[in-house]
Length: 235
Image 1 (spheres, helix red, strand yellow):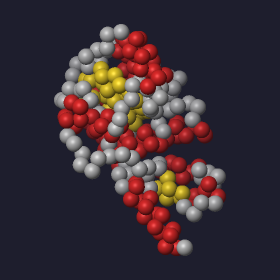
Image 2: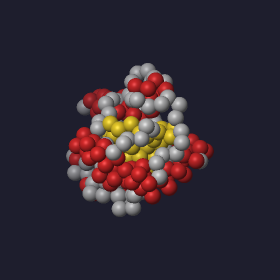
Image 3: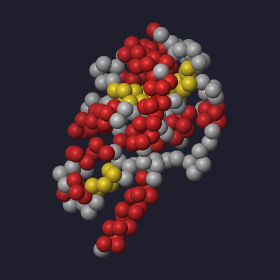
Image 4: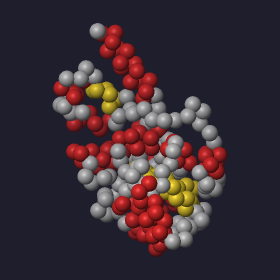
């Protein structure tokens, strides 16, 4: 993106923090990333039932992306084995296709309030079902999280190009939309502590949710189309 900023007519940015890394910032505008959302949003309870969740329980979504995240999976296994989930709390856990069998074997008997999925499609259903999310920090993931207004515990992938996941996570934390655990510090204990803080403090959860939603760009696709049309008109 930095290289393309030297010759592109416009740069459409998915996240606000990305502009500071460009060589020619004047060509950039914040549009957001287009994400898949339905024209009519179904009720949370209906989506939860489709995913095998209880309709009225506080729901934690765990996702390391389609491939899963080893450190997140390991921390969740440790959390469940040592502490379990609080009463009236459930978890939807996308393990990653290649990691599903290992996670299921490590858990043995999967708790009733944990729903394991190797991969979730459409992903918007997972976000719609959730009250809290534990996730990596790619631009598309954060775009989805913010559109659905979810408070997050973000775990940046430490080997991302130009350390962009950590920078993404810090921008969300600065806005009050998330907490951040590094890949090195995430464990069953550290994750349990962060989750307990959000589970017990509803006001904090709601405040973070509002901050997250304010970062969302639900009209991203339309904004990109408008940008393209303006470029064509100028020519």
